[in-house]
Length: 389
Ligand code: GLT
Ligand code: MN
Ligand code: MN
Image 1 (cartoon, rainbow, N blue to C red):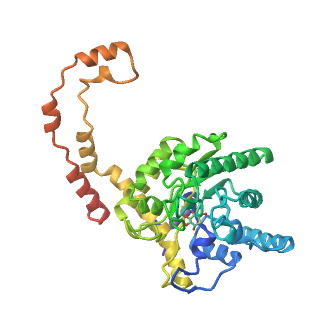
Image 2 (cartoon, protein in one colour; image 1 turned 180 degrees about the vertical axis):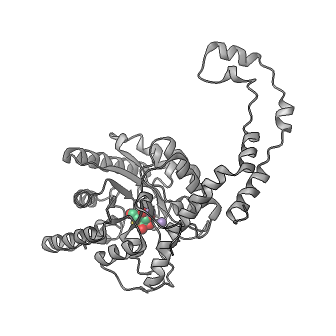
Image 3 (tube, rainbow, N blue to C red; image 1 turned 135 degrees about the horizontal axis):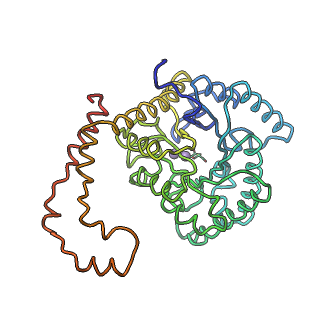
């Protein structure tokens, strides 16, 4: 396919080793695809036109690798990056797969597990930085409970804070050029995961010692699992200067953690997300944290990966078209019309403004009677998305 929707480096489209490398294992069935090596995954991503590849420590280096194995794996991976031109913009730690983390990593009740989690994360940070990562993601998949008899949630938060404070100092001490991005998810694999939404993460970040180096990595599907509006979560993060990374995928509301191809389910929401990111000029990575249907072979995995990027670029074009559409523009002008009669009340607080505002006369009935043409606006949006404009 060669058209306007070819991915380019400037789009910063990235995939995790665990995404296109997903072998289709689920709680009910065995793998349906052969495990590719990290080198093979890098070549697959290069073939479909991705810009970068991200990884968990153990996606690249198995948890039981010897130091010599590690060096060989890293050398081979680095050679594949050089061959293909792919970069590593983000890295993270697997703090959920090993049985040691069955009751959490940083929030485990067992201090030995918490100490091990810190050690593992420092080693994984070293590995990520060695390969060029500038963003370090924390997804606390096991940081939670099935029963609140097991753990005081306030202790959980205190332990999580202590770990992040420690790791921020570690990064500063090493002189690494690295920021942290916290990723929320409401549940799965735990019954409840602490800090279940992006909004909760944003509140928590402000309690950290080095809050300036910590932002969020919102994931579409995770906010949908909580029944929330993803664009609103992203807007809050952006407005707070905390949108350090983003995980794009899709998901039907109320279902299990589906991690579908970007735009596969909620197309209108995907459109408003792309429009938001492009309108504000988000300059970070666009990471697809998703995987192909279990029905696919590796040709289907490539279709999946190409589809994520292609849909993003089509929606980007649609968002430019939306911004330029004369009828949409006219409606927006009408909606946001301002006759200037309340200009005196704009801006910061002052005693004069208070006095003037208290004296002002408002026609409450007329305010309530004004029709707002949002139906027309939304229908125009739908028709634009359906290719009729
Ligand atoms: C895991 C999870 C993702 C996280 C990854 C980072 S791992 O696949 O479902 O949402 O972003 O740890
Ligand atoms: Mn997910
Ligand atoms: Mn994710």
